[in-house]
Length: 284
Image (cartoon, rainbow, N blue to C red):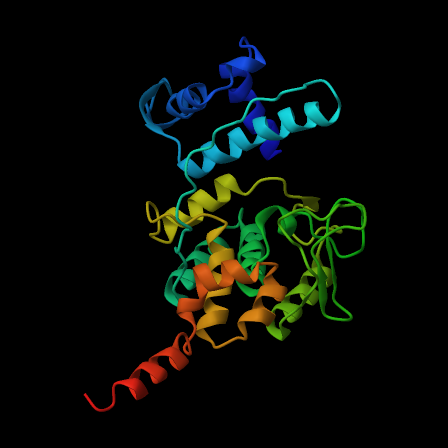
């Protein structure tokens, strides 16, 4: 679905150009052309204000173009493909929820009778750090379109049997006892086979429910997105002293990313280095 969203603006900008027109300057021009509506007329819904899209989004969209050109080369349709120039990669986000913020967000979802599915989503995100799409695809039995939870053995399989592993790793994960209790209750009392369900059906989008819960929790404008739950789960694990290598395997994060983004939250972070520096300077 994300690829489909990227194709529309790419076609609008590059659609009438030849492949040779993909240059550093046109790639920069594409980035400048991408904006989002930040304010609309309350009556007509006409856009009143816009703002540039984030660098991360621009990189993802141009990455789709690069992948398409690479595919054409592999199929023999392009001999000398142009290079797609991506903007510099932004620094990784370090936005995570405090325990108080997480409680407020969860409370806002539970109190909304139209958003109990979101409350389940939030719990799974906080306990497992699983990505949004993978959570929404979860069922209580194996299937080819996504992962499933085995409430008898206490395991979550984030990837379906028919899904190919991608760069975004989806390793199996042991389910924490508290979450497992919730999952067993949802399985007994649910109307369908989906873990995240609304009136017995699977949920394809949480955009509206999420925005409402964020607003009700007083977190609007603070950069909290569904992906923040993943950052939060990993950060809390580090703060609790989890082994960094085991955590990398559990959350499906590279060890490099763990050290670059999350290691500084660990209570033992740089302890050996600090101790060594202290020993070296003890005569000062």
